[in-house]
Image (cartoon, rainbow, N blue to C red):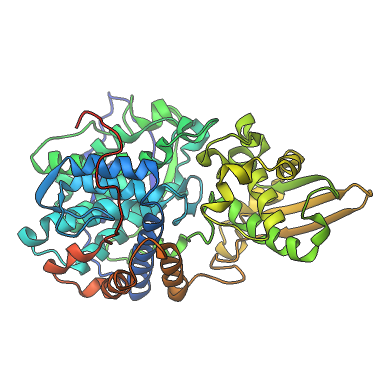
Length: 506
């Protein structure tokens, strides 16, 4: 890896294009280095993972609305849309939109946590959509898709390691837009002089505030990454037609760093693979066993164990208070440090509840399980004994857990914390968990059989059995697919709404 010193430059001191971060990312995208076997296998895992969570969300209102929008933009060759028949093609940017909303809706796919957090799997839908659309024209194969996805993960994760967005209340999709643009640069074999402007445009148009994940969280949370992927496709299209971008997009006097992030004196060391160095970043990301924000994953696993160990706690009556000692990020984003009263509101949206560690812990402790639908149902959220317990749970930042959250050694990183349960009889029970069970350092690290099992579980009752087996068979040989097979990277579901549920402009 090579460290790149990135900081603002005054307009009076022009920065050469070759020295700009966006161009370095474009060069990375153009590197013909082969994908190593472990990375290729993980790409397959994440394509399966995305399809699993997308399938489970096909009937949810935000996904239905996004799919209906895509259907108003039929196109040939076009790209497939999750749920529809593979010959029902839409314009690739709209197909990417619908599919990315489906993937993101349940907050149930992969994650990376560093200076910034990310869901790098959000890059897969736009890459596959463009690959399907241009497969015949450019003879694109599954190998090309694997290489493009590896690039997109590398860019988003490398940016997330170095550049904090949430510290300045900027949403994490500002790293996603450039990642998708870079991935498409790899897919299409674009010269860096083209990809650099796609990256610049994508960043410029996807830099938004974090209000989408604050307070009363709305359905837009699922749409935000889909929007980033959609506009990145459009940015690549414009760049291929010779259109340029604001430059330097990161280092300019009025650009992202100087005006939105650390300011005119801001400075970042962004480490990128050297020429010829394999893109390995996907291996540093991890998926979710539970449908909830990643920092809640470990707490669900600990709560399940406490449920079994202390049956008397299940109605909450024996518990006076629970305090979670955890990292700054967990405390501020999904804990009581957020200052969001909605995180303790039984009538809050599902999107808000999956960002409330107090709610999640209360339900998991009582039920000994977590379900992507049942655990969020209004009847479950409003149960009086749950509400009473929920409101006795708080978080505090513990510097030791914050340090472990940002540890440079992956084996020392932690996304959980210490729980202190004070009982009404005056006794206190203390326990802790560092990482979720499914994490690479956890009790049961996810491997290919777990991704397949997740897909089968979430597809049950949504897809027909033969469709489940067909999709798995195709995806597990992703790197070998020919151009005429890329269209099979989708799922077709029966019993989808036959007519629009709402009416918009399209």
